[in-house]
Length: 118
Length: 108
Image 1 (cartoon, chains in turn yellow, red):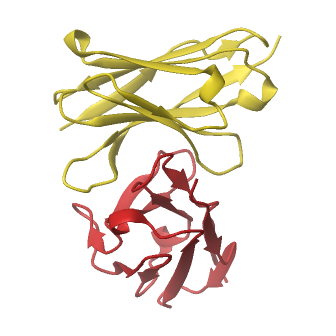
Image 2 (tube, helix red, strand yellow; image 1 turned 135 degrees about the vertical axis):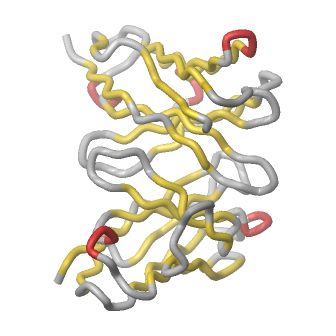
């Protein structure tokens, strides 16, 4: 059974960089798209972007200037960096896998709350 | 960017009733790559429907999806108590992949 687990600091200061890692277990990182999605408290889902196992990326234009995603296949991990954070970046951050053959996000991490505050 | 608009924002129904949720796209969704998710409080979203109408693994058959192009529907044939939560649509045919704003199904 594939499992995803987010890890990283739960508190980040304004103007600093948010860094999260998603560890994939029970399956390979190969041949899939891996995404980050966030959800501000009490609000809806916001797509941040994806990284393909080969390293190609696509980001939400609204966040593109501040986002970088990377993948480490040897560790079965992929990561998110979001620079120059503000209180508006406070959210639960989820990592997720897009399945093959036309499937959508079939596996999700449990989510991790990141609060931006001094 | 494809904007997805879900309606209604809140749907008030009773257990056993039929729920019909709508998702309208600002432009045609490529390959009908439209998904529906269910989210319970404090949990990650769960995939219900792929490709507009294909149920994901383990999803009860009371959940069904339909539609193509720009208009999509999620139908719950008979609401169970655990179905009174929030539902999101998502298109994953064109980058950036986008989500609708959600529909909350509440007990009347």
